[in-house]
Length: 587
Image (tube, rainbow, N blue to C red; front, side, top):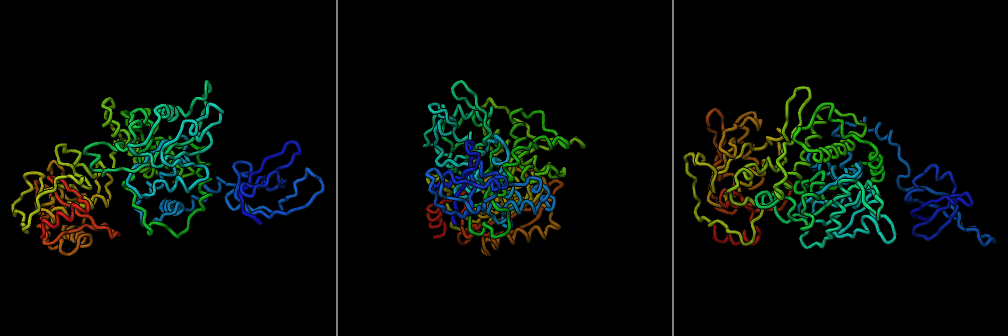
């Protein structure tokens, strides 16, 4: 009894099926045709099996003495797509999302809905032909996990350096490369200025990503492999928004607007949680091989036009932009609604997600190439004729930073040589007057909401995080005022968007957050009051400089970070900067 990968071929001379054992080294072992009929994947790529092998001596020199007595696949060897689609109808959407998330190894209870969508978007290259995907973000977020562990139909190339012969075709032998054999080809560690890149390879990739074909001599060969580019960012989101672009960490030869414009979706890797033990699941999910076969079968279906029953895209969106939106939408539809049946509200949700993924690509190409015009990424409801503009998550979270081009850098972490504000050694009490009426400064910051994203109309942890980081920075510097209910231009938007039952509950909510993330000392150094501003109500959080350093702790994490104010921005200090600052400020 052995476990091995078995590949079967038909010997047309003797009209029998013969098996090859990949590891045992046996070849031409006669196989019962019933096994092949029951498990057709034996003929294509092979299947891992438990096999009972017998040795039968024969005096005939040409006879193979090995015989397969029993064969049992231990990976999926056949797949019933109709059964898969039918079973989907037994789940609600939330249940189905959780099953899929757990199937790829993550604890669905630890992720927000958006984080689940971003994890599942990594499956699109496996179910959508010729999908061009990029994900850049901090280290340790598991960007390559799905591409290396999920499907036997995908290949991941480590290091980001690869030859034309290996990827497309070896002109000397005529043998096709990876894109001719695999459904998905992923490039891990794709970012890095020191990467050596062949410009000719970039040109061939541009042609393939646009035309789904490549040349072998005078012959043009079509292929269906999706391409995924995975890499790390070296700067914070705020720094890239303020000083560069989201493609800044790529090798120089890939920072080519024509190449980047072929990308259908940019997934924001910085929104994905750092992999921790509690993120992994021990719950129920599909066997990975089964789900991989489902994704492969879905490649034969196109759901890119299903949204047109309810919505239309802005006429401002180009053909290439639409192609990116369509492919992302089709992929997410296949993953979440494999039977193609979807309510209008869910169509809108997936369409917005798809538009955002393409908008992120286009926005940051425009930073590199001024010939790319601004595009109105929006969709219109065919019934109501109401147009809904789509913004990226970072446009909403960092609206003030993007609007104020003269502001100092609002980075997550200050460079080691950055100028740190002069610490105040006194517990300074902020002015009791309305200092905020003069506009944003080192001691005043405006936020439209406390917890709700104006983009989605729903509570968003990132909105709360932005407010809490500002409070921590005020407490560690000279004190200051956080004003909630004013936009970045000091226009009153009110408190209604946060949907609290009363101002008392809003105040208690913030006090609870400050206590949980920064401790009781921080809570005692803040005073909250509500005021009228024109015809709106606003909340003013006045902060006194704390008597001790205030560290911010993420929800569910023991990691502490230290923030200060640098001009009108909030800056995270490195460990060495924090030590120096504390020594000066509280010695």
